[in-house]
Amino acid sequence: MSALKVVSSSVSSVLQRNNKEHGRKFMFDGSPDTAWSSDGGEKQQIYLKLEQKSTLSKIKIQFQGGFSARQCDIQDSESGEILCTIHPADSNVVQEFPVTMETDSLSLCFTQLTDFYGRLIVYSLELFGERYKRLDYY
Picture (cartoon, rainbow, N blue to C red):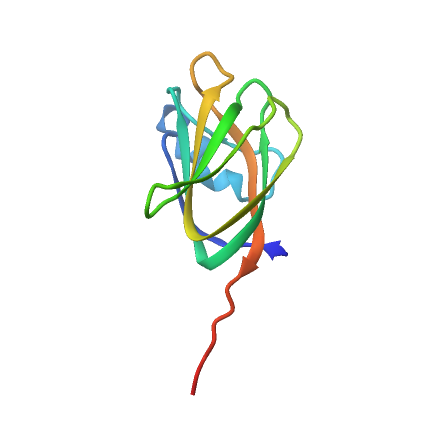
């Protein structure tokens, strides 16, 4: 199992549309001092495109306590099919969730947000699994 490379991402909102200070890139920069911060809403989403089709086996995520979600539906971005549902704790610690799915693009749809205004703060997001091996036939 290895870290999977995210080649592109988008999010449902950014706090005060300030990408410079609160943008999605901060989920992937490895710094404990930066985070993606969403604006308020009933739900928040993160869309991810992987380098290639992979078998996803683990998701690691770190929220700011008080700005997390109690439920996250993980969907195939192409079909919209819910592949699994995880239930994060309202905590600052890095949380790991075992998952089993094959995809090259996914959406994390966070609901039951713990913040009264529906804001979400994510310090880090990592995906682990195995990339499909490309077979070349000659």
